[in-house]
Image (cartoon, rainbow, N blue to C red):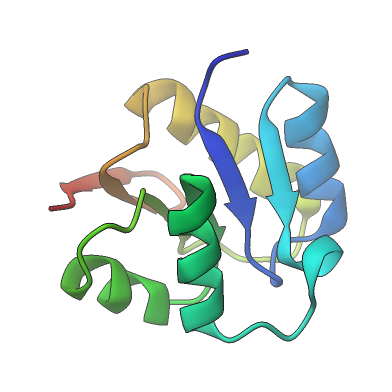
Length: 118
């Protein structure tokens, strides 16, 4: 799959990462690389590897809007309880958005909002 390369923040369950991998996504997780990375280190890794960040952490929204060069961001504003639900919302948002690169995507229970990044 030549789709977007993804980077799961530490707060994304491993089972969600596995579900996305099983659907053919190129995704790595902060949990696998180096748990405890700062937000800035996560952003630098995303920039270096041209990966779209997936996270529950609202701080990344501010960073993505203020700092040029963030490849893309999927911010989850849904209950983080059920990994299957989380994976489904991510998949349906990516399907709807198409290419998430260069976009700040806010995923809520019933809506997906897209903001273009500079």
